Length: 299
Ligand code: FAD
Image (cartoon, rainbow, N blue to C red):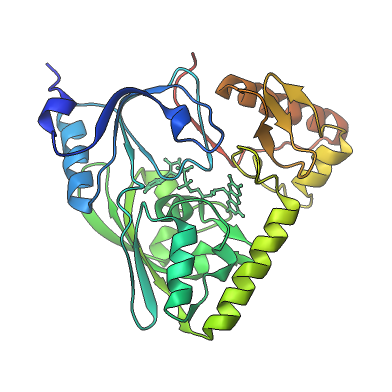
């Protein structure tokens, strides 16, 4: 018989039947059977070992900024890592735990006079999600600054992966192929001028605020960039901006974003994604592949 998660770990914050819409950046998504908020690598490992021993399905989420959780929710145990968020800067490196916000990590690097992470100043993900996705913006990518990453394998082994072993590509890392769980990442940076680092971060955040509908819930750019095309232009040229499905709308400010304007559900998001794919394919013969990760069960 399955051991009760709440009773087994009284010292760890764990919620039962909790709506994940409270955590996703789109404010949509169904319930997790159990969602736990480990504060340390030890707690994370203990929970993974427990799920393995109980044959419970295990899901890991960071800042849920690139995620659609279907309205039926997630069975088993879901870990949200945002409370495991220590960051340490030294002479030329920053080591950040997986749940640390990328934005906070860029600020820590700046405070330590370290340059290299400025491109990520406005990316609202966690370190784990950024490594998983090889997040990038304004000409920079996580792959260019990661030295190594510590993971827990699905079997519960702690392991270090070098940059080369992470096999980074466009919005891809090997974490996606093996279901490893990132617990921390080490970034190799260079000594720089703090005022210049701050100025570059401010500049990029101003650009971002001018182009992206940051005032609305969203999951960022929904689709990957197809080779030879710009996603936003395809969606714009297809006349889809402003189109609504339920409470989800194609942003008029940035065609690549779907915003939650009126109590959208995850199903609204998925129906909108299918609609955009169908219209763009019909008009231009281009298949748009989602960048956003879609997990969970149908309602
Ligand atoms: P989540 O959404 O929580 O998860 C994404 C995937 O990563 C899931 O499959 C999850 O299982 C997995 N994952 C998360 N943590 C771990 C872990 N510790 N170990 C293993 N797997 C894990 N992205 C860009 O690349 N560039 C941008 O400029 C950008 N701008 C954005 C702007 C806005 C307004 C928004 C809402 C999003 C934007 N994004 C951008 C998307 C998003 O912020 C990034 O993809 C980010 O890296 C996702 O991190 P996360 O912690 O939110 O991941």
